[in-house]
Length: 340
Image (cartoon, rainbow, N blue to C red):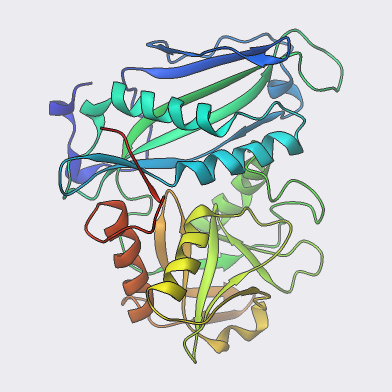
């Protein structure tokens, strides 16, 4: 598929095969130099630990066409650090930050025809991943590993763009209390497939997960982090050892404090105290920000700012973050890595 065949205005969040992806092999204690390849199939042993024991992790980040025509990755060093933490949790060799960023830059440069033009709202989504491979049978760390990065042009994750969506609290847990919730591993997402499906069957955008120990506090919103604006103007987001540390969330925490002058905090967000919040949203690389119109919890449906209108603080945060990503607003030091 070439760029002239892509309908930039109607891109969703689905797989499109691009020209080249990066592949590096770890064996005998070291990563090789890595190569770009046209092959979008991963060839691995049938005994690979990734297939049987879930020894794998992944990341998600985006490259943006800036207003001035340049191309920039948004905070790839933070994705590299988070992937290193995921690798360490699963006894996999971490990918050094320099190697991670270089691989991402190579993939973006090799697929510039797939980068949505400035003004379309689209971006080039990068999916780095590490998987345990090699001939194996027992429950142990793999003898070999693959690190790969591929990319796909994407539009809005949730249809309709920046419009409020409704969510329902799930009775399922996304992760165990002292498990892998803070690592970006596939098993967490596999656990969310059924409750996510059930939520959509009921007409909601996705499921909300409560803390696995007490089921009293909001942790995540589908595959995204939760944030809220209190009635006295504070930016609040949950803190828990089983929440994935969202780079978008921490970016919003910084912007809320430094650019909007809000008091910010990571703490407990109790499901039975939703009336303390004037606005709420879900945030992540894929969705950026999705305003939350309302939350269904049992028989109760709580509406925040509106089911149809975006709250003013959520709107300001969105405009600030997206403005930085597309080069319309000055970025904090180190947040953008230029590709061209």
